[in-house]
Length: 189
Image (cartoon, rainbow, N blue to C red; front, side):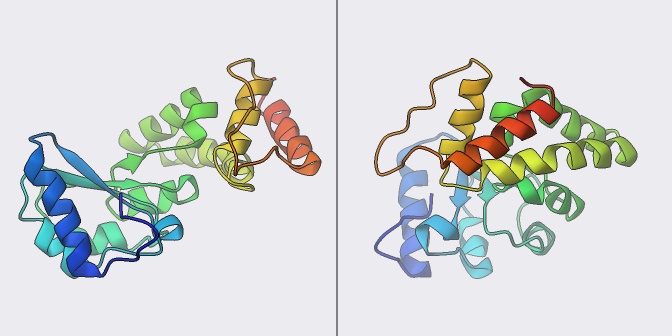
C-alpha cells in the first residue's frame, strides 16, 4: 500500500516497494489508494517498478479509469490491473482491467461473481443488468467510512456484528435506513 501520513515523493514510493519486493519472493499487488494515503504512484514510478519480477499487479483506487489502458502500453504483459473502487468496475474492465478487489462482494458475493462472469463471457446485456442492480448497494456501502456500512449490512444478514472500533462510529440513523432499504430491494433480508 502507498504509505500514509508522511507523503513520500515518487522516489520514496519506488524505494518502499522495491524494499518489500526484495525481502520476499511472494508475488505482490501494489495498492494505490491516494484518497487514504494522499500520494498517487505516477506512470514513471510504475515503469521503474515494472522491472521487479514479483510485483505482478495493482489494486487501483485512484478512480482514474484511463490507468489500465495507459499502463498496458508499457507494463509487462501478464501485469494485473484490479480496480479498488466498486463503482468503477465496468469502466475499469472496459479499459483492459481484470477485475475488482471489492467491498460490495462481501455483502453480495454471488451477484458480484455473476457480474465478472458475464463480462468474461461477453454477455454485456446481463453484465449491465447486474451492474445496475449492484449500483445502489455499492453506493451506500461507501456513504460513510468503510467498513462501517458493510458491517452493518452484514449484521442485518446475520453474518456478523455491526461493531466497529474507534475512531469509526456507528452509522447514522439515515444511513442505516438506506442500507436496510437496499438490502430489502435485493431480497438479502
